Length: 213
Image 1 (cartoon, rainbow, N blue to C red):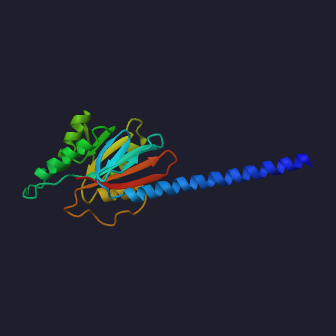
Image 2: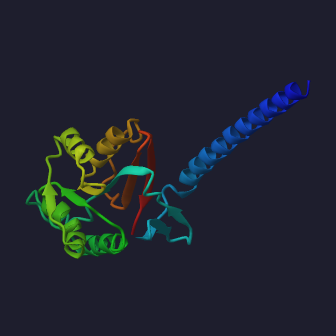
């Protein structure tokens, strides 16, 4: 009788522990989801110690052990619209934005930078590549799937920045995340998108759409 009582007690205790564990997991997952919802579209000040610091004083902690790949997507900075050559360079505002992009990632590890072969995209990441002593790898914006596959299968490219265009970054975001997030291209004057897509070791993904000045 005594042994049966002990077994029942242990069984109930194990059930309660299991329920508590499930609730804790759900709470953590809910908290993470809320964290993303709270921070999306915020303006980034800088990134250091695997933490994204926002201009409003809040921050988002990047769990480097959990994330297998980090894709950072951005459109090129402001271009000189008076240039009708078809390959316009950056204007003054664009050069300042390119410098800001370099400042943001100064204390964050970037393993590779990819850019289309246009003056405006190359100059957007020129300062960043300079301070990181990284080459700029070219890609064809018609071969986005090949680019993603290359990064995903690479053993050395963990944090990757890809600079593109108003009509390609939304498409690339949708493809990487596996859902239709953007239904149209970016507006012509929309230059401040800075999109993070974390691909986790458990195959799940986190999308954190941010902005920068």
